[in-house]
Amino acid sequence: MHGRRVLGEMPYYLARKGVWRVSRLPPLTRSLGPVIEPIAAGGPAAEFRHRMHVTGRLIEQLPRFDSFFQVFDHRVKDALAFALRGFSVSARYTFHIAPDCTPAEAWARMSGKTRNVIRHAATHLTVRPIERPSEFLNFYDANLAARSRTNAYGTLIMRELVNAFVERQAGRLLGAYNPRGQLAGVIGIVWDCNNMYYLLSSRSQTTSGGAISLLIWAAIQEAIDRKLTFDFDGFSTAAAYAFLSGFGGTLKQRLGVERLGTIYSVARTIRRGVFHGSREAFSANL
Image (cartoon, one colour):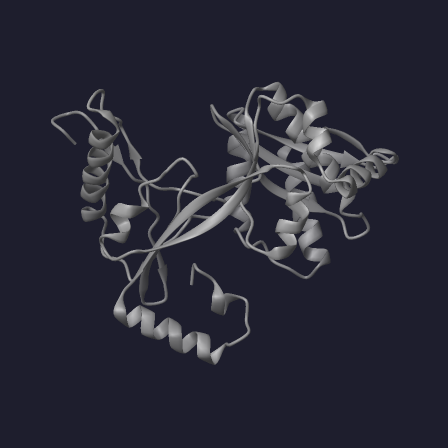
């Protein structure tokens, strides 16, 4: 604050993991990070000093955590202030499709394999909005149950979020329906003033991956129509990269910051040794 004027703010999430106080990305939140009000004059050097100062003050106000981890939105470039205060900085990535292209141009930028998958899916699936969130959520839960999996985000949290963005008209649910009128695949997209984000997807076990490709292509076209950047909202595996890169987006970097308390760091190292090879052992959000 400067008087009554807010110069910067930074959301964070507090959770308990056993005896540990941790701050990570909340469920279904891909990025956070500080938001700094720019100064009116002074040039780039003065703006940089301003951002460093305000970000530093925000860091000083953070509570004590045994583990702190955030991934910043691609527009947030303030990781240096964190690095100078003992945080480690790493890179994550996402793909963007800019709104200044036409659907024909976006189609031409895709790989031939992705276009063929979409064409094939379009011969037997029809894309249309899902009007009732319960239809989306029940389909999502049924697919998890069929694979003997649980909802990684939390069923209640997902239901609250999906109902909220549909009610507030800040997102949409799209379904791919087979000739019998049954859902074969679904995606959830959300948007702000600048971007549309690919948030959620699911398909039945008997449906090929082409259903999701077809739905993503429908969402890309809607983003272009709304003059919004389509953001694939990140990926963390080679398989996800291979799938998403076929849509012809531009690679964008997101910076991540992390700081661990000494005792927590030792405990995590031991846990990694004990559970070597497990998925969770190598999670940045342990």
